[in-house]
Length: 295
Length: 163
Image (cartoon, rainbow over all chains, first blue to last red; front, side, top):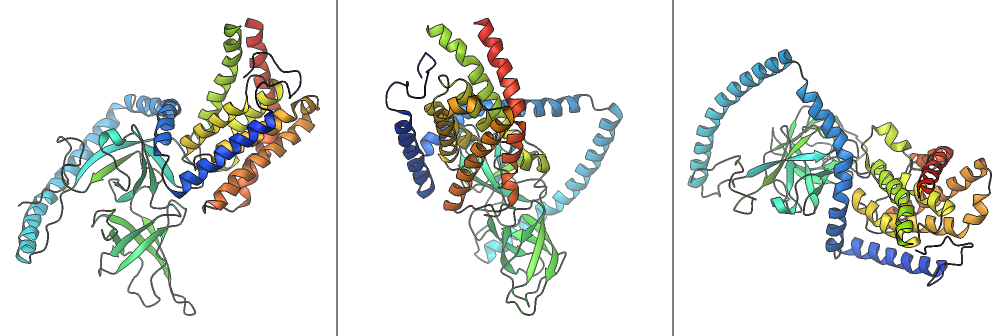
């Protein structure tokens, strides 16, 4: 950049404006091709992401302050109510958990008898969603955990109600995830009622999934719970994905129009759980594990 | 000389940083479709009004930053911003003397080129998003141009008065 303001467009030093435009455009094009064809550019991306992180944090700051402020001036009565509700809920969950422990032990015993492999243990880590909207046309978001926490590409994300999405890119301090409602996303599911296997595809709307590969005579009805089947290898099996809301059987067409509502609160989630499938790949020993399969 | 130059660059970088933040701020859906391309607007402004302070290389790096922030294909926004900056720099002497409404229309044209390049790259990369709402930011950006102009003009004069 020259120090003096140029009188005309042609007083720039070095190559002319048109030449520089041409060279930089070529750079852009080759960057895009490289980035699209294969991920050779992860280094550059990581560097840029580190530079961009302060901007993201800056944008997130007011929202964070708002949430924090809201939390600190919540009325006492409200807090007490919430406390009561949570205590009841915990009691309820504890009772169920007792039953779960015996069921799990029984399950492991039965599986051992049948020589089947025991269900892998899973560990989880809570991550916060950075209040940053990425491309408005795609359902992606950034979280505040990255490579340093052991996050890897393809890792599944859950919330308290079900499957949220998976990681598509991991930077040192943050990671980018795609929601299951993204139009480019598909995940293998089974119908909980009868074990029917199919694939749930995102529609681009946060409250709809579609099941395009079910024939007209498939045994499926509104209200059926869809759970992840674990077949793709990316998502752990058995987590709720959604509920079927409408089944439209069209006599002239080979496939029925089936749509489902995601179980997870995709548009409203504040926190998500990162899930590690097994083994010591996790970040540290203090992360709680979801299921301890007895040996 | 050196100090004067960096003093001159402060409003440019501050406004660009602000535009980057505006670009990724989360919004309700309706506002999101209408949200103009702030970074492009600010780049256009500095290219028109003070072409010595913002070159093609800065536009290129800014675009890369925007790509990283928005999770787009690396180079997508860079190419779009670069082209807009090139056109703005190339014709700034002619455009600078336009009356404001004519300038707004020119800016709309530049934003349309910006949006078209993004759209085109999306299409080639196989993530086409159809829909007329894609062009809403172009219109809104053009209509907001007088405001952007007034605001940034203020900043520029303030700082120049100080230095």
